[in-house]
Length: 188
Length: 188
DNA sequence: CTACCATGTTTAATAAATTAAACAACCCCT
DNA sequence: AGGGGTTGTTTAATTTATTAAACATGGTAG
View (tube, rainbow over the protein chains, first blue to last red):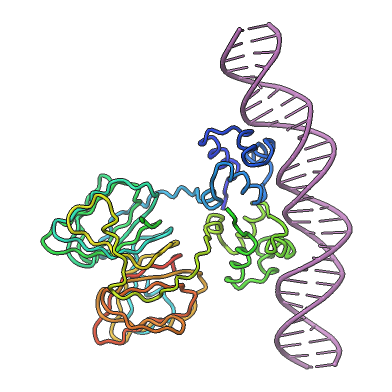
């Protein structure tokens, strides 16, 4: 957990086009404080940091959520690629199957049970919400396009991607398609 | 941005079954420090807070991403109670159905596609991970017990609850049960 | 009931963050 | 060139957090 508070603050401040003094005034601290923090020569109290971030403005959660999470490398998962977790669950009785999509270190997720009529199509290409989404196909087939990758997914197949990448769902079959998905943070 | 650091820390510490002294030792600070922070009588420096959280362990981002969501009041959702979102999605073409489980303000979620053989049963009653979980039944029937509430869920029905509440899944039918769930933060 | 061990709280001494003000460097303008 | 304005940095004084140790409470065994 080596979080570089100083560099992070400087980065954010400059991204907002603020000088140390300008930010200091809006935040109600002195410019010296900002300087020392950015050099990591003092570790601000959270109350100070909160004041500083109020001048941005930005929440503490946003500040520390700068683990610019690299987009997961694997996007499409075939049925057999789902990770079975039942074996690692303690206290289970009988035959239980828990199968996980990818190696998620998820964020806020919205669970969706989606159905697509034959020929149905979502033209959604851009998301302002920085979010991730994933899902599992239950019935039928769906053509999923994510960036420059395209895949036809059938029952048991799954997907997981950063939804800032343009994407699209199309039911190219003649059967209704049913899938269950999750999105983080919630799409609506 | 009124983040209650003290209350938050106390909450987390107790959820992990640690005393102030136990946490202090693991973190490399004194018990008095923990006490004062929890009473909001001192605002820790982020370096101190980082040390404390390392004893949990927990990242700063996770710590501040605690918009203490009150446990959702509704636990069981009948098929018809799922919230249809397709109408609010812009740019869709054709017949698309997006149905959401509850009014989630989710956190880190783990997506699971679960199957239960007839008679299968999870005896899991306690979770140390503060987490939420939810899911949708795809096939078969499952008896879900959450705290003092019990419900038999069939295809299309769903659930959503705070998994710190003792809970249990039982397939009481003669058919295999299949459901898709999500858990936040990841269970394993 | 008493002794003991764990818990959280408080207090004076110490260490560290924050301030206020001065310093140095840079750019722009006349 | 030389002001006037800005930038970020530094330094001594002050405020605040942190420590170490004592205090108070609660439960439990003997």
